[in-house]
Length: 238
Image (cartoon, rainbow, N blue to C red; front, side, top):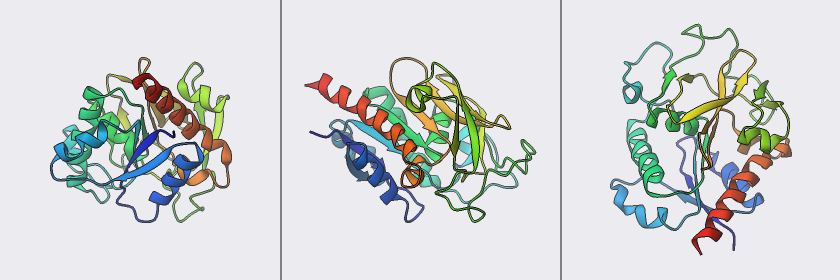
């Protein structure tokens, strides 16, 4: 039986289908989970799913990492932030299921673990490279290269140190959470992926592999590795 994968509903219309397609092609059974007013409502579901994906979307409210809003901050959804922060904490503390964070999803994992974000990479002069390429090139095309650390989970996925990714973000990780390490960087040293230390599969990527899989099927490997870990956890439960 396919492992059941919870996919957090995104507030960016039209992209949920890409996550569903990627999970299905990788061998999982996708289940869309929307936010609820009371987290207890979801706990029975979280106890039977085999993995969870935190998706992309709006900027994260800076108050969640003890900063005030600055110039360049985009649209935020504080209710989504509050819900996902509570859910991440609960899933990390009460389950051992694999977690994949995509773009905003990577950032929310980092914030929950005590990390912080650059609210706008260009405004803060962190880089001269524009990482927000939406509207400049198609989202399903490569935008720049990233460099993967050897002996990392992502190196095990892609089998090489340099890959091409898309780029649809203007924020980036400032300080990495204490339980994570940066394992992938762009040419300008912006952190492009984080992985939790230890054996559990908890990985966040700044790019959108779910959008790339159609034209660049090598990115399906990330979902396959994630599903593989979910399947192993499912077998261990039985």
